[in-house]
Amino acid sequence: MPNEAITNKNTISPSRKRAPLITALLIIALAAAIGFWFLRGNNRNSLAGRPVPTPDFDFGASATGGSAARPGDLLITIEPDKLENARFKTEAASAQTVTPATAGGLRTTGTVEANAYKITPVSAIAGGILRQVNSELGDKVERGQKLATIFSTEVADAQTAYLSMLAEIERHHHHYNRMAQLVEIGAASREELEEANASYKIEQAKLNAARQKLSLLGMSAKQIDELRDVKQTGQAGQLSALIPVESPASGVILNRAVNSGEVVTMGKELFRVADLSTVWVIGQIYEKDFANVRVGMQAVITAAAFPGRTLSGRVSYIDPRVEPQTRTAQIRIEVGNPGGMLKLGMFVDVNFGGAAASEGRAMVSVPSSAVQMIGAKQVIFVVTDKPGVFAQREVSAGAESNGLAPIYAGLEAGERVVTEGSFLLRAESLKLNPGQLTSSGTQPAAKPVTQEAATNPPDAKQSSWTQTQSVTVTLDEKGFQPTSFKLRQGVPARVMFVRKTEATCGTEIVLAEYNIKRELPLHQPVTIEFTPSKAGEFKFSCGMDMLRGKFIVQ
Image 1 (cartoon, rainbow, N blue to C red):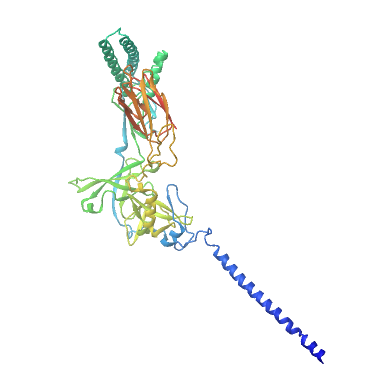
Image 2 (cartoon, rainbow, N blue to C red):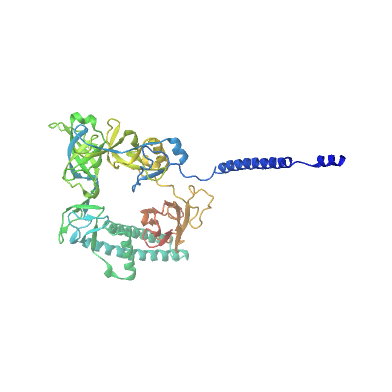
């Protein structure tokens, strides 16, 4: 019995053995579930700070209604966070047919004329015989293009006189140097040296006058320098009595008054060149309509020769005088003329502030809130096909009617424009290009990056807005020292010239490329400030062009 009791006491049933195992498995399963839940939460949190795609904001009826930017558009990019907060609203430009009910606004007719401010006469700068005429009436010419050639004995005489003065100034230069040496050894008096110096300066003045006359006769500084080289090499046969007549501007020849072989006098008008990229439309408005038209007002031009085409212009002048018989005043509209579409003398229709064209033509319109003014320009902001990017585009808009503004040029029907929030885009645009507020609408030139010395670039840590490049050049008996130096392109330069001797012709310093000419007194520093705008090698010289140096712009 005792042994039996012990046996029963140590014996455990199978069900009691499985209970702790089940409990352990439940605990493990619960721990695994909790761990999985924490890991999932951490993975979600780890996405914070990672780059995410730009959100697809809903711009009006369609998020995919953007269009490609056009050449000349100013692109404005808005960051996603700002884009979400701005809550822009957009709307597609609509097209409606112009009917008598919608075709309002003041109308008149006008005649196309050339822009008188862009007509340039081409005259003979010297008398002679026309050897050749290269251009015909109506030809398109570029600035600097040769229009004709004049044979002039006056030019030949002026060149001969200049070469004679070069020889004479060289003789006086040597004489002055000899007198200076004789004075130093006591073989000549100071009075004789002063007389030689006076004669030398007189010849310098004569040489300057001879050089200036060649310039007035149409010879460039390069051609005059080549003439001087001809004198040094003795190639007298290189002299030429032919004067090229070059066009002073690009445009179309409106008038040709001469033919080959004709004798012309100095000042005679040979051609007349007009830039027809813009033209004037001259019209009349009645006295009762004076209050509805003002300078700067938009106008739309249409012509019977081009049905369905419109051109945008601005009122640039209103005559302050009223014609007594008709009770009208003359008005002038300046209009762009792409491709020379408008011909001089054409009759056109002019519309101020109302519908742009004849009945039955589809006209694009947008909500008036979409049109913003930047300086003198009317602009809208078009939704592009890139998220967060808007295109600022100049348009020609008419007067508001029932909350809508007609767009005569610059926008196509169906393009989406910003209607609410466009003033925010205007502010962003002005940050990118503040110069738009000027009348020309161009961005002001950036402040040039400068350097402390011509040969030593500035410290990269130093502010590029406060640096300048400077060089000192001395002039002695041997000439300019140094004879050449380097400058950086676009960097304002200060070049100081110091003349240290009287035995020289360098009483003036000339930078022909920059039209700079300054007197150079003895022992008095003269500083010339300029900005080298283009790369290359450029000459500086004395007033007689006897002593020369150069600077290299890189």
